[in-house]
Image 1: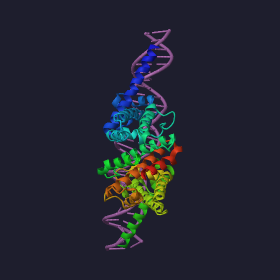
Image 2: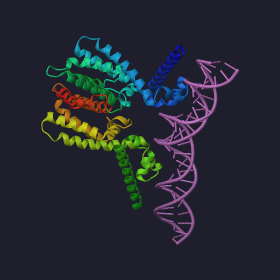
Image 3: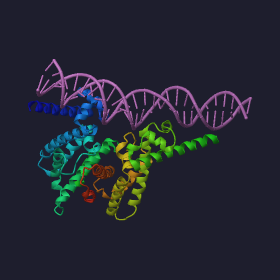
Image 4: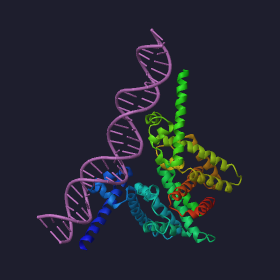
Length: 194
Length: 194
DNA sequence: TCCTTTTTCTAGCAATGCTAGGAACGAGAG
DNA sequence: CTCTCGTTCCTAGCATTGCTAGAAAAAGGA
């Protein structure tokens, strides 16, 4: 019993180590540098050990992505509860979201562009993810009009999210002129808040 | 002289063949299926021939992406000039954009998510790309307010583009509940057109 | 101390993008 | 028609990738 639990504890510890190493490597050198060999070397184990914890590289990226969602949720929450004025709150949260994406591009990619087989808008979605979405939803709530339903709140949140996600990805891939970054964000917020 | 031109003509012909094969393969089986070996087999030449035309696989994808931009520009133009009412036009163009992305996901990815080293928002950007952006800009023009500058038009166009791009990518990766697709689009258009 | 079970590593597979080297081809001269 | 030279093209291979089988080692229990 005690031995069993110790083993499980050590295994869980190593699993966290893998996730942390993958994340740090991705953030410092990009996901291309995160090969199974490099990752194995980083954690000082051989490659097959990775596969005893995760089904494959995608699963490792998914685990990193979930961690990233938790971080994003924290930052969004801080931004949302900083100011009282709803309009100001919207801008704060948007800045926090975009700032997160710019500060941790590799992490952001794992969360929202790379992984596909991660349950998202369902009940089985990771709690961290639902939490992050919840922060966005509460930020958007004041923007819903009287004649709009509760379902509109969810949809409008997704529209808000889409706008920011589009800005982030298209900007980073060089699709936009970088100098108008603030102006674009201001326009998005202006139009969303009527 | 004549021989030289014939050779150049045949070379150009083969280059188009490569692009077409890559595009068809990507559209029917996804970009993962577009390997250099498979592509070589498809055009009935050996792999090195590909590299005599393009610097690498990315360059082939870029060529396909440019073709896609031309197609998109055509569809956007048709949608923009179909109706007279600006509000209706906005919805038409948006539907055309999203429809294009859903109908040709692989092509869309090559254009707006995969390729990075393609000049975009500069003077050296491919004409097809500037044309597509121009269609969006003219669609958005009626939405610019009196107190907003000409630079705001460009920025607002990019915001419009961002919103649609975000909707498209997040929807396809399973980040959204699919059933609210139309509602999201309606909300985006509503907020953008005040 | 020995056996069994679990864990871990070595070595290798198939597939990828890409490239060097020589083979085959074609055009012009004799 | 034949030879030569330059161009074009293909065969074969490299390095790297994700992933895995089977042996080796370690750990635990008798």
